[in-house]
Length: 236
Image 1 (cartoon, rainbow, N blue to C red):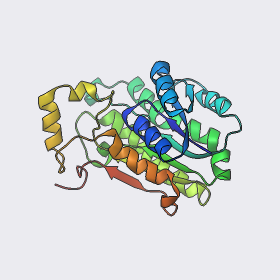
Image 2: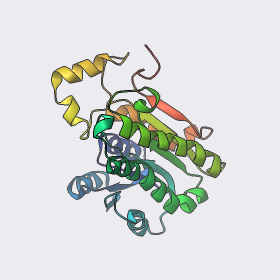
Image 3: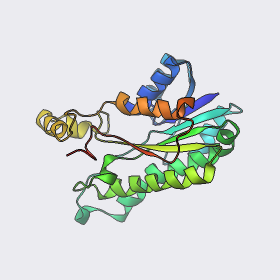
């Protein structure tokens, strides 16, 4: 059986893939950067699919590459950081973010539902601390990820008892998509100090929780939103 990881070349996705393989699991990697994806797949001796999650019917390509392989885990580690004041936001900004974070997650879940159901699978989605904790200029991503949290609860109810569905809500994590924020050393230090644990997140912080949620060790957990945020959402 395999666990399918979308956004596999990102900070969290790649950390999760490496951790799962180290644990003896088989993974199928999905991402849009073919060079990075191929390198990671070679390192882990895993299968992979190169596609853009905003492409029409991308999930059919994933399904084709998987063939008859049984799947017992799905992690949608895809995200975006779209920061704009409301007055500058266009309808297209919202639509693209919702398509990437919500609609494409739904698409791959629909495609793999029967496979996951047959194998008592687990689904892990990703939100953001900005859904629970309000931040300026976060209207786009907070709205899209808020929808992901709603989807998590709805699908946990709909798929029980055959598929578990949970969600991780990280704070800012060192990654390619956050590089434009964290490359400024003073800004990175300032952001770190905003967290009670006084540091910015690493991909492994969230991937370790995702690994647990994909495993049998979490077999009595579904419909939960896990804050992996250095305490930012709940500790003053």
